[in-house]
Image (cartoon, rainbow, N blue to C red; front, top):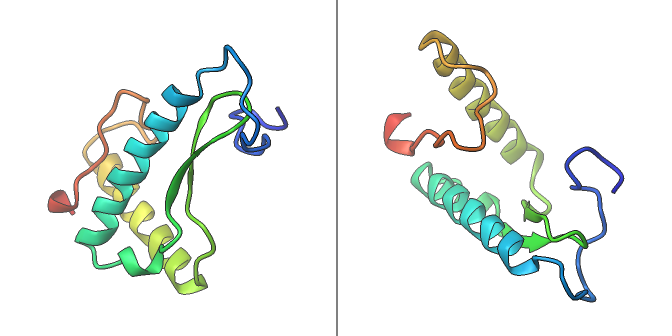
Amino acid sequence: MTDRRGVIAKRAEDLMPGVPYVRGWAQARRGAATLAEQLKALGLDSDFPALSADVNVFGDGLVRLGTIRPEAALVLAELIGVGLAMRTRQGAPRQPSPETPYMRASAV
């Protein structure tokens, strides 16, 4: 693993016995589906056409955004900033825990 969360680890192409690939991919699929739902609600789904679930060699789920236009990255960064500002104003911690549900588009 080359980073703390395994994101830079090689993607799983040849599967090894005993590695929970399905669990990691299923978690990534849920994350990608939730993100796709939010992007669609905001009218940004066409800016992320390669959004997909994947898994690395350790069985960790990954959500791939794919190549996006700089404008799409700026809009995404702005939305994240607005969400963090709202959380801070509400007294919530800056970093959500893995159990914390993410804000829905209806709350934006």
